[in-house]
Length: 236
Ligand code: ADP
Ligand code: MG
Picture 1: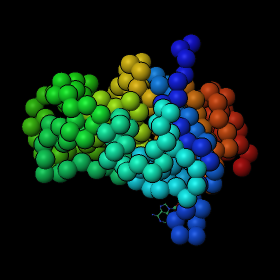
Picture 2: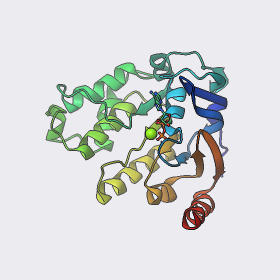
Picture 3: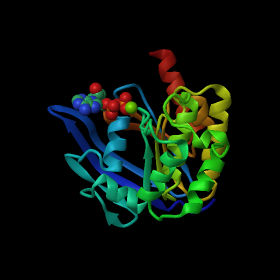
Picture 4: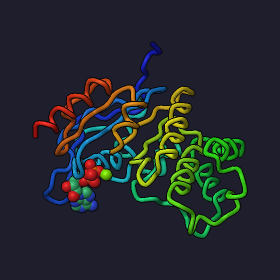
């Protein structure tokens, strides 16, 4: 197997909203060329973990590293510049801008400004047809999720954080998404995916972490971890 160099890592992350502890000591490694998945019930802290990794929430304790660099106090836009790209659970495209313009913003905010990366991202996500000239407003959810992903890719990221990328997609769209994510991992990108669709996780992830109440309670290859999860839910 290829060596799993950790691109992004977290140690001892704690996060609070007022008096409520949403992350309670999370350690995580996100290696290059692998798909790392996080599953767990609503409210487990998955999105909070993403916010701490992306820089949109400051942890109360613990650290985040990008390679050997401590980025715990680095602002979100500076992390994007380093090559940490994300999509949001709630879609965040600019409705009045066209598909191409939305994707171009990703290139301008990213690690390197490469106009070729915009075209590659549009093509990879199947957005290089007439849809590219349409305003994002009114496009179907599946298309908007592809716009978001293309925008994240247009900055040539090293790490891609995807919060529920399959939400609202039909099964053909999920299959297409899985192909794209597999391609990105094969090209060396480090992927971290929070996802409810356990079939997608089982087919795609190299490692799955199960989060409950702000902690990672199980980790391992999907066949082992998801079977244990199924058994636990069956007996709950
Ligand atoms: P998940 O993504 O796993 O569903 P979240 O990270 O969104 O979980 O939320 C974890 C917990 O933190 C939940 O109990 C949620 O209600 C709470 N929470 C999330 N965001 C906020 C916020 N901005 N203010 C207060 N509580 C929050
Ligand atoms: Mg969430």
